[in-house]
Length: 310
Image (cartoon, rainbow, N blue to C red; front, side, top):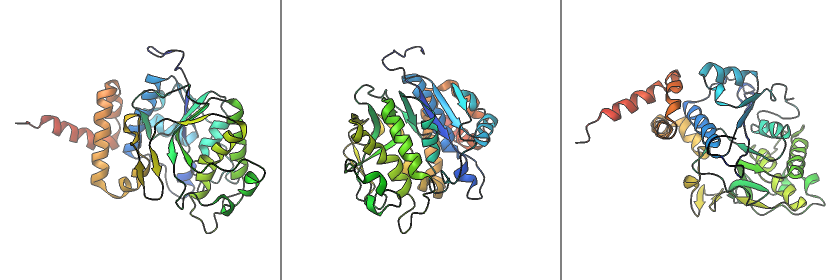
């Protein structure tokens, strides 16, 4: 148990770094600067509030973080994604499928946290057997009717109806072993050889797999579910209904497209993350200074610090 972490909140989490979605497209794997910053914030904030963080990755992911001086952030590193069968989990369509593979190798209770999400306060553990980031509406192309999804019918027939809402699992706590096992078994079965979305947006398959099947299995087992925060994401209009999550956690998520396309947005965002990291975890600054891709943001921060406010 870490200093300041009580047994009531001591909970292991996993990070998942699967490089196959990048390399399967013929590209190289190179984490963008903002993801390096959120990764550090994510690991350290979980360790501050709840406990150890394990990394599930492959050889390339492990070597990349080691070269950047970030691998030793983790309490444990497992190479569980090195031999993922691309037919069983297509890395292009199921680009988040590594999370399911990693989760299947774990036992409850355990949390799963995305690399681009970090906590600003402890999670309300104990409020539900399955705790997730927030609700999402299902009135967008991301969530077509389940009977239009290839391979979904076998998970619908004879089962409780799918909940009207989806759950965002950028942070998810699995407190019940039956639920963890039922969900990962169903998700792995759904993904296996099922990588043709037909006339649907490709994201519809992983969204159903990760954010609706998990609720269906919870309903089937009578598992209590709850979001971390009360706001709901309107997936059709890309706006929050109710409060945004910034009080509870930060999640890069839907900003990634603009971060990739607009360098001024990207630069401002990275500088903002660097400032938050320096304020919360100043001991991490020396290691980050050694990462070449972060050098421009350290230079910008130094210029801002030298500006005379008068």
